[in-house]
Length: 103
Image 1 (cartoon, rainbow, N blue to C red):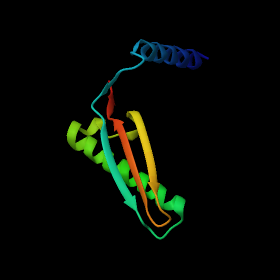
Image 2: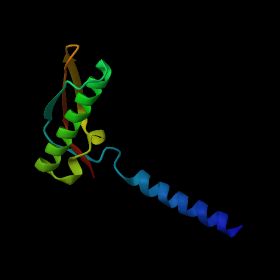
Image 3: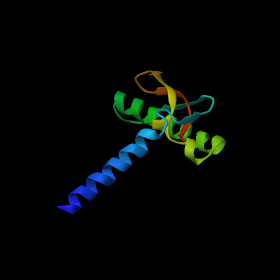
């Protein structure tokens, strides 16, 4: 029975620490914009997905090289924009976002 109380105490202490952290402890940099084109022999949606994924990968690489390892995550970025266009044979996607790091 003591083990259950110990777990509750640890969980309460961890919750208090998390609650004490600032709600929005992010540091963001200027926006980075990258483009990628795909003309792969797949479906129209497959070409668009490939172009989008490659543009985000390029964005991540530039964010890491420019601002450091902690800024490379697309999921942590602010003001994300993804625009894709093209023809039946080729898709071009442009991504833009502000790279951010937590804490």
